[in-house]
Length: 89
Image (cartoon, helix red, strand yellow):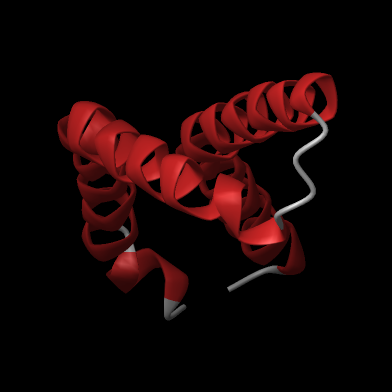
């Protein structure tokens, strides 16, 4: 396997990781900021208040985007395994 091939595979893997984690991170961040704004407006200083809504939003996002994420992972895995004999050279 040449250095270019290895670097290309690593670049694709890092981009795929970013692409798969982006929906969950974005939803968790938006929910966290929303809860923080409500806490600031109501002067509630409880740190654990935002945990459950962020957790539920992240789980809902995983359920909603799960098939898409699995499809991306399967495509990448198929690409790796189908080119395995070329990588060994």
